[in-house]
Image (cartoon, rainbow, N blue to C red; front, side, top):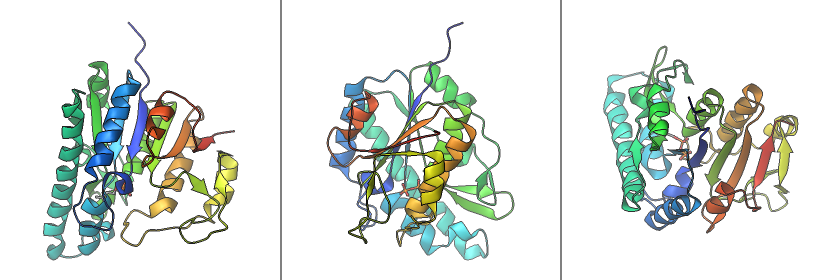
Length: 269
Ligand code: IPE
């Protein structure tokens, strides 16, 4: 039997696919361009995970979904968060279908349970099957059922962590709205230095410094992303993670075909 293809995993951050400051506003031109870059790169096996941006985050924040179940008033917020994410997911999948790319939605909350916010079981049967069929599974950060807390918010980053480790992915591309990692928040500190390459240990040392949480981000902003990246490299040492600015033309395309680009590359050693 032929060896299963190892998928490339791409995260399209919420700040890339939506206008973060305007409720429920997708960035259609960026979504369309990124899908065209994926088409052009002609990847054999690909999984895309997208974030929430101005869809999931503001709703989840309003109803304190990430705090777990505290009162019945939150229930409608749980529904609304899921609905918002499905709406964004549809827009993104439509863009793939428009380019005749066979993308399919895989709803995380329909197969993932968390316990205190961390993924418990993770059955990749459907995802593997879709990949074997040469389809593109598209997942997203979602509002999920939690064993202890009742419900919680599951970030796309934690899903990527689990996918990367379980499927032994060697290339993980994180698309965000800045060029990569900095020694501090470049939006607030002009002296922040860009990090081109970094190892697992160096990243851990930097970890405490990058405590940036966007005000409407319920999953911890850059801080949350970095911690999830660390967990990937802790468990799976062949992973190479590239953090790229997906808002810049052709960065995703070049990252997919291994061209040199401005980005932060993270390896185990
Ligand atoms: C958050 O997912 C999911 C919800 C708030 C429902 P992410 O944490 O992956 O989203 P972004 O990329 O930061 O927007």
